[in-house]
Image (cartoon, rainbow, N blue to C red; front, side, top):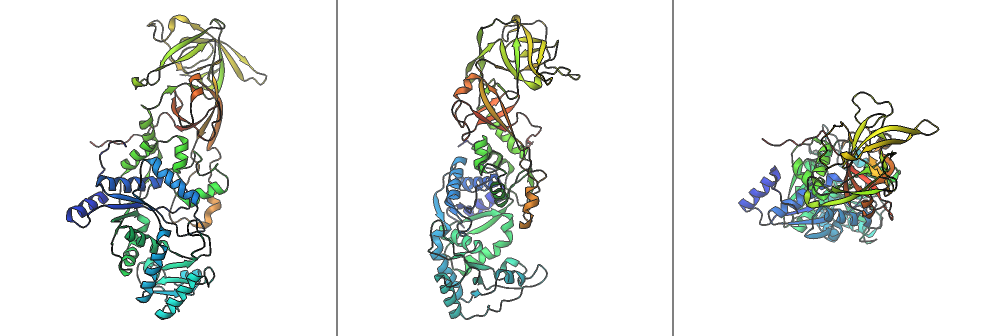
Length: 560
């Protein structure tokens, strides 16, 4: 992994003080995703934080799957998450599942019942919601709140045995229905779910809630610093209550930091799943998706994502980061790594009428002018070429310096050509232009005569490799991501899908790219950075995903 200076932030300072004061002997963190979808760029921030914080202080990081809801979880998601974490460059010290601890969690729930701190409630989910109260009004105690310990133990055991239907009973903590913190108003600890679990099968039909399972998992594993996003700040008193009242030997501490919000980017697994389920994208790894698998397929690099995560830092308040900042780090990572090639995405035939028919000359070209170590390659040049449609106009506006009748430009790394004539089809569209070239103007020849204002790129026609190019725009129009968004707004969300988020073009690339392999990346002059799609490229016709455009107005502010 690349060398980097550990970024300073409030959580790192807490860890340093804990070590200095002897409150912890070894730093143990964890990344605890629920396997109900694919990881997205927001998760990358948490992954980088947890793994690098532990690495810096020679500690450990566990990967723990919060698999407590069998209705939504799947082995597919488990495997994809493991692949994504490894792709980002990290290896966990321990691989665990909340389901590893189901028996232990059950015993701790029984302990709470015996202590008079948990009871079985027969109210429905709707009744519990209605009696929870508001921020200004206390909740109403359940009529089943004062059941005896013996009755609660019996009912809870029968819940486990499967004697009751889904939703018929729950186990609730007995805390304080008048607490100003709604999370402390007798929260549900267990619910009944008759569903086959991806690991435990049909062994269980009761499953712990996140707020019960999560702190217990941390304590069982000896996690010292449980890092989560700000929406869990109000859950911290319950987290501490569970650890304390379940009499856990290890006492982890929870610390909250701001989640990652990006402009023009969906940061909700539920909404991303809607896009997949309704067919707006090809799947979770569609290159338009902000999932790590989608970004990987598009051509983003783990080095760029790690650098971006470090740069945005760890803050105590939420904010929105410009997505162009992420794109900036992708460009910075790729610019010295990948060869710079020529590709024509919207081809227009150019014929050099005074160039000898049948002659092909091979030009020596640097692979990357900023990185001489990448060496050179040869590209063919002949009478017939392809240029971009936009590099020719029959009736150009003022200050248009590319090809038009009577104008002269330089062909990149080759010669000056002058437009003499054009050919149109029956619709009046220009389909071919005829030029003459000046053999004295070859690049590198030392020609010092007249100058031209325009330089355009090209691909030699007889050796050109047909290719498909996929250009991407944001998936959504005017998306405003909020945690408070209601479930019932699915339709309005889907109406925001950008119908122009994918543009497919068919053009040509240099012959050397015939050997391009799925996963290779390149810079195409004037177009941006492109990646050979690992799923769509078959045989000798590559499919290129545009990773990012060539330039952006965005600049990372440097500290003075």
